[in-house]
Image (cartoon, rainbow, N blue to C red; front, side, top):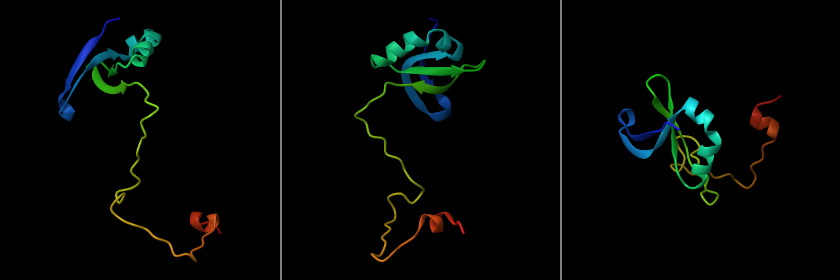
Length: 96
């Protein structure tokens, strides 16, 4: 496998240290790469003639819970409904 070490991404002002490979190499050696990821390593994906970093394959962590922000007011506003509040699914969706 012909691999590069990705050490910086100036466009986003971040510094990363990992193995990085072009898309074609990843397709050719996908099973080997998955074994490396399974052992805890991260692999960067480089794309195009300039080999620009576009993505990363990382180990799956079952214990890690992903928290998603829902909208720009997430955590900034509190919504309460009265006990007598009722709305059907049709009303919510604006269906006649």
